[in-house]
Image (cartoon, rainbow, N blue to C red; front, side, top):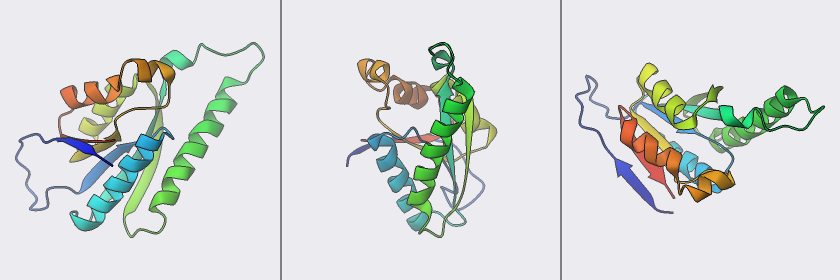
Length: 156
């Protein structure tokens, strides 16, 4: 498992560099590796560390449904599955965590949430699940690295 880290230079009041980890999850293998890395970091580097699992439903996916399909129900089931699978990775850990989801542009929402929540580090996979994302070769992670206010660790 490889990773790339972009560390921002910013002053932090606490002696502990990483306390709040934001981990975007989408069910992909890269996302699972990122979560395992965040869990390890939180246990070994963080004091009073906390992980937030974040799932973003791309707003452009909302209009791509067949007639008669209950899109809200499908999305709720998919979000629940992804967040439950991600939470299982943390279940044996002493690290506190919570989870949430939002609808919007994934890169923008990840950066917005990281800033609003004053997160210290975003830990995310290099690629997501969608074919479109694969064609753009990790465009979400690339945008997050460029625009995040905090450090970003990209796990491959």
